[in-house]
Image 1 (cartoon, helix red, strand yellow):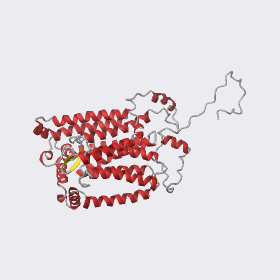
Image 2 (cartoon, rainbow, N blue to C red):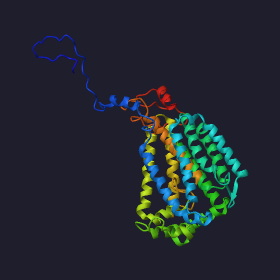
Image 3 (cartoon, one colour):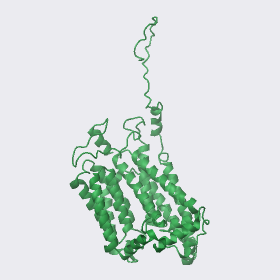
Image 4 (cartoon, helix red, strand yellow):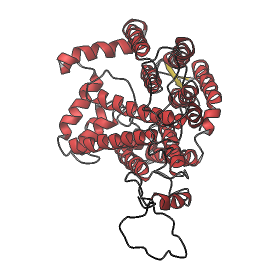
Length: 452
């Protein structure tokens, strides 16, 4: 009411300069918001990186360095005459992967939306090449160039990128069977089918699950998702139990037997449980594991979490799980605050992908699911898996960096702090029906923000 005169006061001389009326700031608007906008514009490249995510990834990499050396020094000495040879290979892979992470973090993630089709075609070509010219190891062809490159690992990340680009461009057609579900099923089926031909069931399952969750987040019809999931589940069970490789049938039968009697479980799982029992609460000490020498298969890759449980105990294993939980929470926050719809789906897809890989490895080691052969992200030995996961973190950092360097003030209606680009889906309308505009925004504004 500062603009109106106050009644019942004696007249006063009018000042020579009339001051501008003072308008109160709404409670929901911080008074310092306008002052923070110029500071955000002055942020440097390094200051815009997500420090919390970098810290968590750095801790996981440090744990990976310790555990890779602990699980490979004896093997390295016997095979190469030096206990550091395999470890230094892992260090080299980590350095290269860190460079890839930084490059992708400083490159605007929106460029990958335009290159998504090219990336997918190159990946499909690599999957076909590995079937024709790949290294045949244990009746499986999964790698090229003497085992140094696994196209299946790359396919997981490329499918996330392509799905984010495709789904963000089909926002009003996702619920349509012709333009949404059918092309989605064909695309995912082609990639997953090529991976199954290697055969690599765990990678194919990861691709299908992550793509399905992204399809759901993009606003797909729940009934379509439920029916498709049921069909895929039946096909997967029939493939594993009858049509798939012999090792898959053996793992499934041993898992079913081990549910009621742990002594009937897979040998790999039994040795992992023994390692956890040996570790107890605080572990036997770093480098003091006994299971890794003779009994535990692949202690530096698939079984590395069991070695963590034996050497660092329940406390160490729980700390590793906590780091993954923090990483997932941070990734979800990045997705929710993304500057555009493509970035939101990309961040969500990468987060779900990393979480699923970690969950599969930990679940196998604790006898919760059948053995899959999935590596533990950031910790297991392996060049392809480490580099691809670090590339995914680079994309996450890029999404967070673009959002942090925005010039819009935090209290603006268009600010990422006030928008949740993943939360608004009108699932009540029928297929092909009109999409309701977001509250306080026109349809044209909604599409403008979706296109970034």
